[in-house]
Image (cartoon, rainbow, N blue to C red; front, side):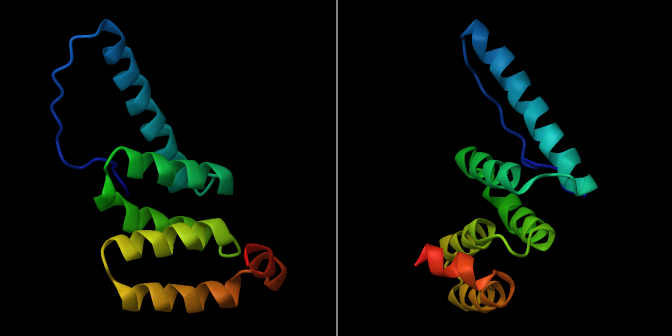
Length: 116
């Protein structure tokens, strides 16, 4: 089970709209989490989830989430690129190389050619 944002964050903001935005953000993360657990998250929403986690600074959640979504959509070049990008951020060159080799075996050749 994944729980996004496992570290506790305290925000001191004085805008009335901020509380609503934080509640909406929490609800969005809950929906993403449930869809990921059920395996019903789409490829496009998976990309959006990875972007959101990165934008929120929830980098500790990215390795597990990228692994799960590439397992769900092994033919998705976008998700494999996100997974390799995440590994590169932690400077794990060996993992990037391993993931590239796995992606090349799983992503259809016509998609790889379009990326070139």
